Image 1 (cartoon, one colour):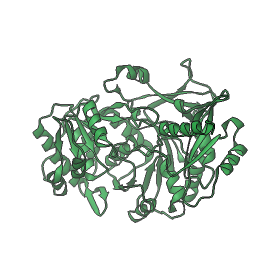
Image 2 (cartoon, helix red, strand yellow):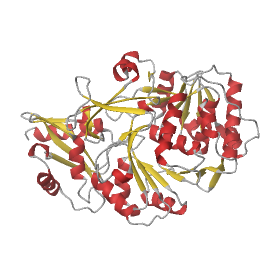
Image 3 (tube, rainbow, N blue to C red):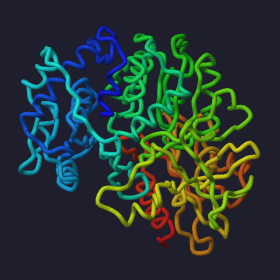
Image 4 (tube, rainbow, N blue to C red):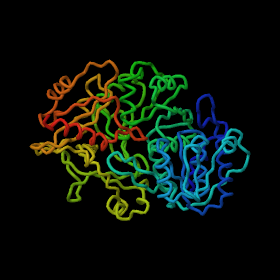
Length: 501
């Protein structure tokens, strides 16, 4: 089934699909806008399966273009709004985009490679404001044909292009809806970009359920986010760890009553147990869903039911319906409780591979089984606990230190908004722990206080050797910390510190 048909077939025309500022867009208006876009694609006479770039921030225009690309039997290539003109042009050229959907603002910023047809401008945006009543048609597609090309987040390495099929999106959407309990009366405040796989999954699940997505165009002003949750009576909020660290430690989210909020979704990395506890205390009526996923799995692979938070603190839960999750040792056998292995995943949501990269596909997804690169343990009940990304381990004095364990300990300090722990070279230890720490304005926490706290809570080899306070951590377009940039910065500081005056 065509993914656009699948996502749009449930809701009545008069239901609200998308809210952006003072404007509400109904599902009928969305269907009409998609139909208008499909007509424009038909005029271009693109071959079936041609890649189409989609650039810009979340908007009604973006949603309509995304759905229309797939409805027309083309492959959507979402591009983060944060890309420079050169980056977007390079990505479009590498993927082989034959067309692009750009808002008027994006069209002024970007010049696409020669031969790329561009749908944009005031005329197109006028069509979205006053859509024609053209009938919406959907191209027949094979379930295993590509629906989207998604760039990986690139937090630890250069990004790759993941092929996502129509079957992948439908399978993952069904798995999420099986546990999330999203219904037509839900209103999700969207702070994550739709170009990010987690943001895309919010779009998929809420459209399929006939629910409403409320756009929050910026996360710079945190109080604006909290006020939007309240004024729009949003029932849901989803984010990555940095989202909730900022809201809990640097806004009124932790103290303001939000009676309509009934679900909080977190994925995109391991969140500090201290922040999990603070959220639960602040919003006891909201179900907190701790989830785990990867771009190569279309979005999500597991979740921890809210009622299991106390008994399985720090766990990502177990595989979703339709997903097989294993933690596997070096010998290829399942680990026993307490042993560390790599998470492997299988199911209909797993990508068929990377675009134009058979070698890496064979390494990462041999025989359709995703080797996630995340190291984890299991308990006696089969619940999985991520230890760290394999590349983020710090090797010090013969020990393998999980950077996430250090970060969770630092986050126990209420004056810390966010932290990233990395290893920096040391002549005797191999590596020692270094942390980059963000505190709110006026905070009095110093390095000695932070180190003293860690000494009281961690073994000696895990205590930070270098503490660097920063105004912000480098984040990618999804809001995840780019560890390789932190590592480069702290290694430079450590090197400068070790050079004799």
